[in-house]
Length: 170
Image 1 (cartoon, one colour):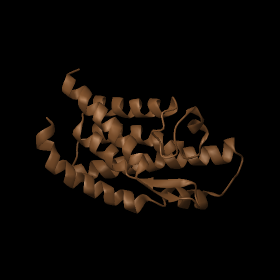
Image 2 (spheres, one colour; image 1 turned 30 degrees about the vertical axis):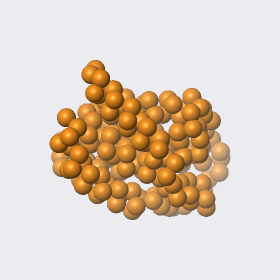
Image 3 (cartoon, one colour; image 1 turned 60 degrees about the horizontal axis):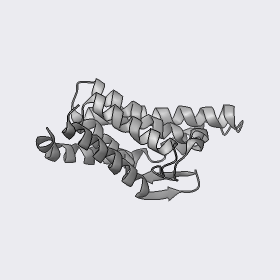
């Protein structure tokens, strides 16, 4: 692995962590709308699959080891939060985005859908099985997909940024 690749991976790990602190709290569902997704998208678009996945694994390991890089801090206890699936969904999204050969916007939409479905299924699992609080599938869907429109706008924005940055990265 080249020094330039490691530098980009470290940069995106830091940007995703910073993006988690730029947030709009949605206290009524216990979630935050953050700019993490924008930096995850750019990571997936600008880095290859191996480097993007390593970046997200580094970010998740940092947060789970206690570094306050997630929206509400960090620590192994995050695994028990119903919204942890969205953090894991970042890793799935970068893998999916780098596994398909299509237009940039279609890649970001595929990543968005995989990200949201990971978050949704983990949320449902934790609420129904672990916490034994069946909230209903409709309410779970509303809680999990509440921020999909702003995240879709971030997909569009990331495509524009990608067009401008791509010529400088590699």
